[in-house]
Amino acid sequence: MKCNEIHELLPELAAGTTTASPEIAEHLHACAECAGMLEEFRQTMLLLDEWQAPEPSPHFDTRLFARLREEQEKAKQPAGWVAWLRRPALAVSFAVLVVVGMTIFENGGGKPSSGNQSAQVIEPGTAVGDLQALDNNHDLYSNFDVLDDLQVQSDVTANP
Image (tube, rainbow, N blue to C red):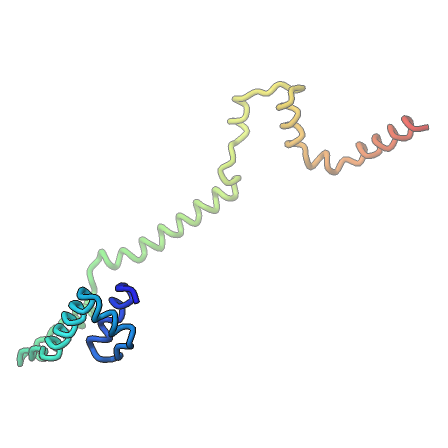
């Protein structure tokens, strides 16, 4: 076995919750570092077994209950006008935020207005101008049945 695998098992071995298999025992006899770590763990466990928690002071319970009563009384008292103002102020600010958001959404969601587009003049007949005209009139062209009729007429005259 490798030392890393043994290091993971050392706390259980020192506490006595698991027994050492023959492979582990062989590694502990061969590796002085792992055997030393196991002995240190065992000494630590012995010290922890001897340790006793200190007794609380005789007035601990009295002071604890008095402190709890003080905290409960503070919670019952109003915190002042700032705490009273805080909740309505948050509600009003949230309502204003919702109204502003809905207004922006209703007015186009931040799209540039036509006034901003007039600053950049595109000449008709250029590729960019034609693409913008097609984009602006997409609904018109997609529902324009006359274009379909013209296409059918041109096919009939071209192929007699």
